[in-house]
Image (cartoon, rainbow, N blue to C red; front, top):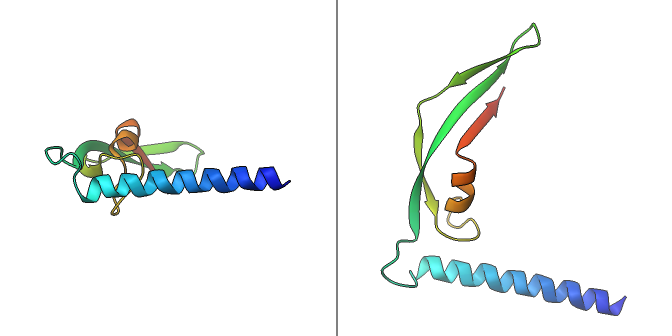
Length: 93
């Protein structure tokens, strides 16, 4: 029981340390030549259910979104690796 608590505490501390290091890397631009922000083109579409049980899809114009080049979200921006893998965003009504 005690060893399990120590392992969980160690895992949480390790995760917190990685998050803090990631945040410091973004805020202080380490290395200085690398830009902390990037952009990804996102295709959004609306999924509108109809009365007959079918779904109508209404595609919007592609939008360029700012993202952060890090492991975790920072400063209100999603990570570029996540946003590039989810470049199609469905909005359900």
